[in-house]
Length: 408
Image 1: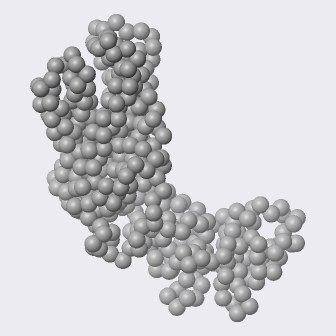
Image 2 (image 1 turned 90 degrees about the vertical axis):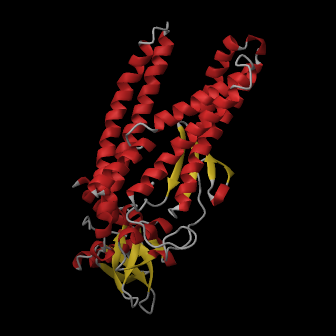
Image 3 (image 1 turned 30 degrees about the vertical axis):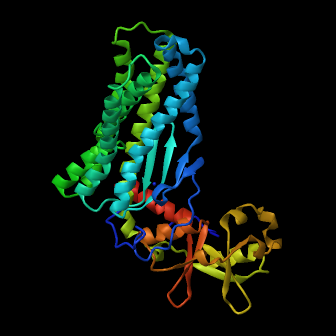
């Protein structure tokens, strides 16, 4: 609990790792709770299909099914079933693209949290950063490379069938879509694979990973503007008669794609800056002074003692003086001023679970891992011998990081 206003997501250089691809000394990851439907765990990496995938699958089925009516008029309503099969096959190709990233990341012992198939393709959530620009380049390039290979395989398969048949149409669609996926991902701006390749090249030339990130992020932002303006203009310049609905769809698609690219580039830049300032984060510097009271102490009295001691937190102790809980700031705010003399602090405190006791010398990535492992509003900060040093509020940690990133 805090009682004053004082204030104290593909990582940095790769630490030594164990045989599971995790940094040595890091506890095993808790089971991932993905967003969507779990469809498998190849190589131990969970794959989730998010709800947004069903939206794009329905859109592909509707659009491609309508186009099939012109190419294969004898199919009738069955063309929509074929179109849905194409949507599934296309995203299977996207999954191969992401599995390529995953395999290389596992080969480099970077760890992969999960793969998600979503509205605009797939995402491989790689836990750690490559330790060299060459590894970063290869990790990024292997995805588009596999998409190009798949496009070539489908092209070769097309040679064995009539293009005006169902297999011919499907193979043509899969060839084109994989080539488009490869080309789009090779665009040189974050968060696309081409942006990571550009980052690796600038990193290799400058010797600084951050320089590469800044360059690739700004190219990504410029790319977002080009997509926003250029995609509708390109569609209009093709000379094909278009309806108002077609124009509107192009504009919406361009806006969504541009927003995804812009936000991804901005997020990559923010994360890179965070990794730069993270090593300087020390829990000892963030901890607030505390006062210790028993569970039956009235809240008003506890706050009075805290003000006199210029403390920012209240810790509940047992009869032997051992800490057993931290009074939650949110619970304090919920108690009206006039009732505070009559409410004991005990019910307002969170019991001290093992994960709520943090070493005062903890900092950097270790601190973030500890906070992520046991989410809470406040943590008890202790010395190596178990003595209470203070209380660290999650808001203090977040504000320190935000200020450090914004100030760069």
